[in-house]
Length: 183
Image (cartoon, rainbow, N blue to C red; front, top):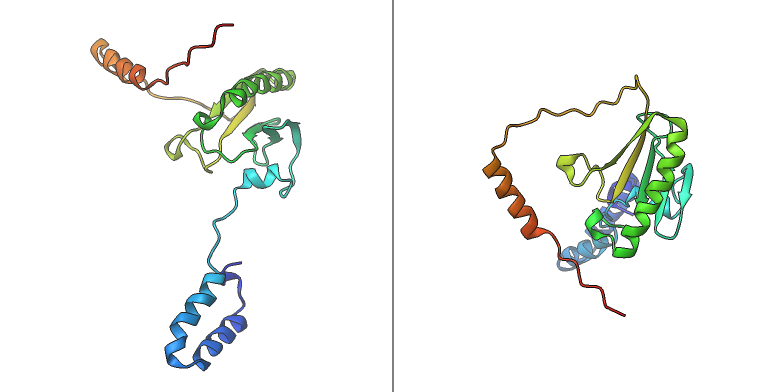
């Protein structure tokens, strides 16, 4: 519980209690009382969904992932697929989860194509990319010819030498595959 959830009367009672103490004890007691009401970080909505604490319309669930219909969909069938484990980014998935994720996306894509003409599969990493919560989520959006969703960008001109520089930076930072043990 946090102090902002206390009623005005409850806050007044606390204040009166603190004032009733000898002056030398007030500061320490105030710290003790406020520590009890420190504001907890808001719980992640995706974790709450995974724990069945928020009602959802589930369309897929396994030990690692949950897929539910988006409550504010772009189009009918808009599905959000997320890890049950609280992680911020796809890079935090372990190898087994990564393999499983691909299988789940394929399975859901096949089902969503039965109600649409196409699908966008979107992972937004970081606030600048549109990630609203610090939880790994994939949006699977069924598309139709005249829907309202638009994904556009203005291409920029790049020189071959700039492409090579970017390539080198990417390659230098790409995780190296561990060699598989030979039987």
